[in-house]
Picture 1 (cartoon, rainbow, N blue to C red):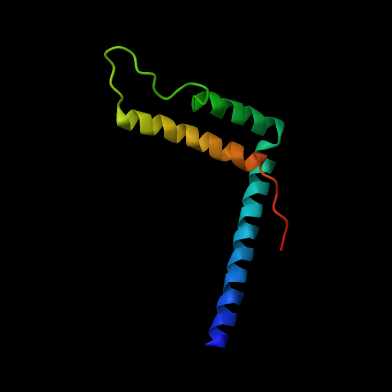
Picture 2 (picture 1 turned 180 degrees about the vertical axis):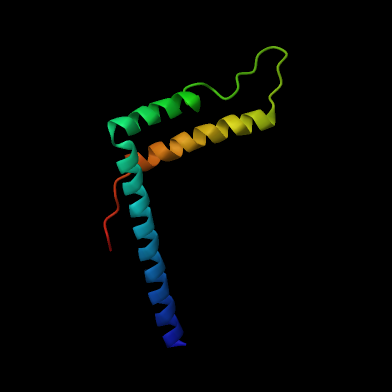
Length: 95
């Protein structure tokens, strides 16, 4: 029983370290890709394509919200915000 607890703690620690390592690598990759002048241009293009600064739907007289279109537009925006969030994150320390 005690051996299982120790093994579970060791396994949890290993999994946590792997998760931190993977997150660290992901953040570094995104910072490298979008940290260049070209990367910034791509990010600016994505901002426009994903219509980040435009509301997904503004209801006017006689219009009805199309749930599929709203999901599509919000999906595009979520990709942009995912990238933005990663490049703004601080790189986690090892350990």
